[in-house]
Every structure is written in C-alpha cells, then in structure tokens.
Length: 164
Image (cartoon, rainbow, N blue to C red; front, side, top):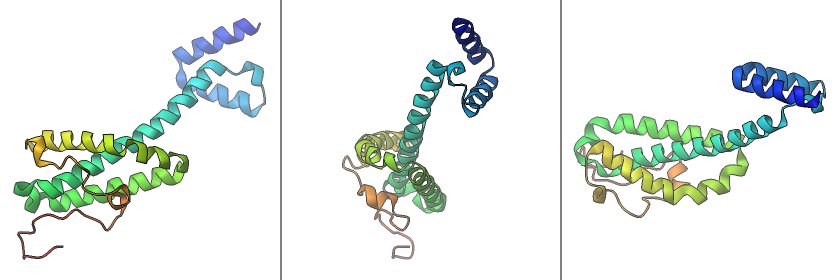
C-alpha cells in the first residue's frame, strides 16, 4: 500500500503539479504525514530556497548595472538618468523587501556582492556597447552605499554645473 501511495503521488507530481501541491498541503494539515510525497516536497523546499537567493542576486546585478550606466555612460546620461534612477529605486526597494522577508540571506548578499558586480559590469558593457574597461573593476560603492536609497555614484554633471 505504501508503494502504491508513493507511485500515485509521484505520478500526480509529474502530471498535475498544482493538484499535487494542494493534495500535499491538505495531507499536512490533516497530519497524514505517511501519505505525504516527501521526496518531491523536500526537492520543492530546496528549490524555493535557491529561488529566493537567486532573486536577490538578479536584483543586485540589475541595480549595479544601472548604477554603472549612470556613472559611466556619459553619452546617454542626460537622456536616460531619470529612467535609470527610477530603476535603481525599484531594484533597491525589491532587494530590501526580499531581505526583510528572508533576513537569513543578508550574509549571502555580502558573499555574492563582488561576483554580482563583475556580472553587472559585463551587462552594462553589453547594453551600452561600451568597452568593459569603461566600467571600474573595483566596485563603485560599498554594499551599504549601493542599497542606500539616497546614494548615487559621482559622475560629471554637465547640466547646470552642479549635482542633482
């Protein structure tokens, strides 16, 4: 009978994920632990954890990319800085929300910061079609600065002769 439950839940997992999910939730609520498809449930939980970390990583890369474009892409800054700053604000807000929901990921963001910065340099270079050397090899700010909603990198302010 146990083998039949396992094969039924495996089949359900592969054929109708949403139904498998609802069934698993109902089994857990009813404390029918022996009926739960543990292998797939554990796999799903591990995947959820990786997804949360990956979300923060992708947001950080996008944030850094836009900060780099703002700092280094002189030809497009005047026209695009409003859009870039809006995107920077959005990415910062999303990172803060994700870290508020998952505070145990805070040490991980420090761990991945340098790698994300290098990925952001490549993205900024690809999108701007400027050589990667235009974008500083060393991060343009600390993680604290990067996440600070009031911080922006310094750049040449050609309009009005003064910073925003």
